[in-house]
Length: 489
Image (tube, rainbow, N blue to C red; front, side, top):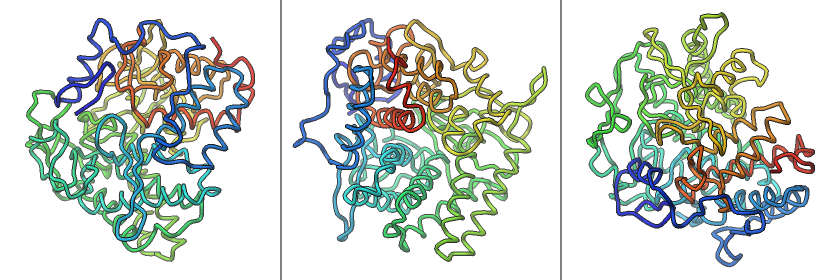
């Protein structure tokens, strides 16, 4: 059952739930106007009811909160950053080793992408917290088991032996294996897993999680990316969903739209779980190439030279194809990155709030922040030339086809701030994020650009953690924005 603001609804399609929610004239569980600062309270569970407590996170949380002059911003940070640890993790043991399930929030499943992103910001303190390291090892181990079940699945059940997928995936025409909650092939899912593992290793130097099963799973990642280059055949993945929504199914007998063999990795669905219009998603390919390069470096350190060379070659092939085919020439001169292409010369320019996005490329280490092509792309993403850029009385930002017109994802506002070099722009983003919370003390999946009381998913842990990461970044590099007037209003 999918939970939404205002109560629960019976099992149904996820997108139908979201659209119905946004169409409501009023939501009784949330006020129409943003609550005053005085009502923004500590929304964390009592200490005894928290799923996991990290002393390292708690120390950093208190230290940074004390430096935030704006009490509303401080309260939002205190609620949001530990939200995944407080509410969404389930530590356990499998075969005597740590196991960690990380739910996405109010949907009862673990997304490979979301779980990686949800714990990412805690890596900053992992070295000083052995218990947190054990929790992370557990997630890495669970992700390995998931990949070995099915690398084409995007989400998995709490019980990996269960044969009951999410309600909206129950009739999908694809190969559903036990443990799979949904089977939408999204190249960024595997890339996020690689990023998370490599990030943990670099942050801590811990080699415990990286035994034979992990390397076996990484080989599966490389094999899957190579198969989805489709250089010799369409590969094994097919998918169709008979709910009548084009964003949820694939054409071409389940293989997706036609494409040329150019060396990029096909991604049938976007990070938003919406079907791609053209099968080469540029941000996902950027993240895949970056992950493969990181994996190559890690393999070389572990003495796995052949595997390192294989990863490095595939990363080079993808990057070369991105450079050759992934850009759009502008009529007035200059180039920008496309969002999707098909290899035949057709391209789509837009951006979607979900990460990886074009806006997020420097955050992910996939582009330099001063790169002229990315800067031109960023300017276009944050303008009316992006069909999913919306501006309203509450805020402006990027949404996506997943929810529809006029609806902004706070994630895009966070990415705008994290990729900005302008203090006024960052301060405006902080103000917009506070407004989008609508006095709830948390951020949400999406909100109406003209009415923050209309929002989706009151419990969406990824965006809460990402907001915490933004505050950590500002505390490290722009503390004056937290100590001064930045973001007040």
